[in-house]
Image (cartoon, rainbow, N blue to C red; front, side, top):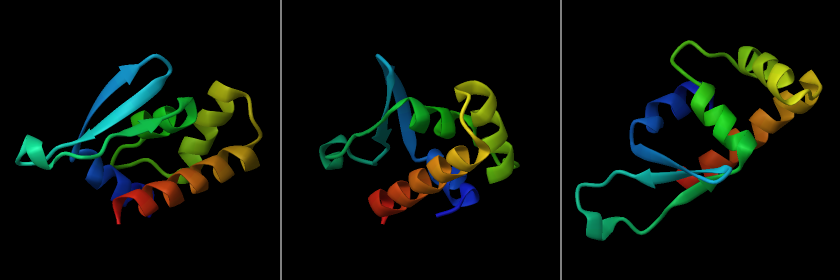
Length: 91
């Protein structure tokens, strides 16, 4: 999964913050069909909230370096792992 794909599926979820986590609730046509919730830690929440149609991985990594005081390599690695996990959950 890439950032553009993630941006497209963001519209399929409602989000709520619970403590330090972000809870994603998939929107479905029928509430009875809703059988999954997804929770994201602080890093996942940051990535989810900071992607839009024009965001690149490099721009997102730069923001993570500023906000979390991590190395650029660690930021890119975290983004890559996040996208991989999202891909596994969605498909």
